[in-house]
Image 1 (spheres, rainbow, N blue to C red):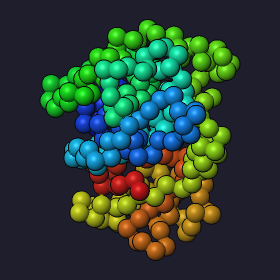
Image 2 (image 1 turned 30 degrees about the horizontal axis):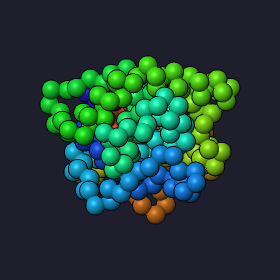
Image 3 (image 1 turned 60 degrees about the horizontal axis):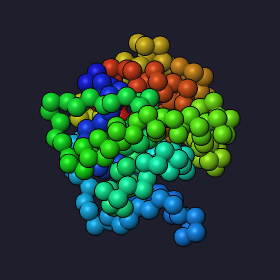
Length: 245
């Protein structure tokens, strides 16, 4: 768990960027021809790399969807900094360029760490080196965008429809599967109760440190959304005995 946190803080393995770019290519917002300034080409036939594990899959999708949230801003940064268009980078790699730009600004324009065990991908190394050459101009373009729109943070640029969806999602209960290959439902309940959790009959009875057993799937537990960070820090989750749905 500590190793994963370290990788995320310093960037991601090359395979994560490749897969996130492939996902983003399929979900990015297509603009009309008269408004299209950034072109994404067609790399629909290029396969995704095999996901190393479930965590890598989740992180790839998370990176792709975070890029989608800020697509307009990221495109404006590329154009304003004159980083795009770049004739040495084909349109088929534009998705990778935008995904890696999102991650670069998320790390405050600090270079990512390359880990010894990481399998390097030529396209990711090429795009990464290109963005590093323009880091100062990219950071300045982001600052100009924030001044232009009087934005305290990049969250200002999230479309209103997505903001409403995220607000709604943040209030939904959390479902966790009990990994019965590693632990029984009874042992999970005993562990939770030792940590101060109380079982209630249904979601309507939630009151902070409470949980309920799903009425239809008896190896699924439901928790209040406010407990997400605490639950993800439990040994039950770290040891994959509880799996977040």
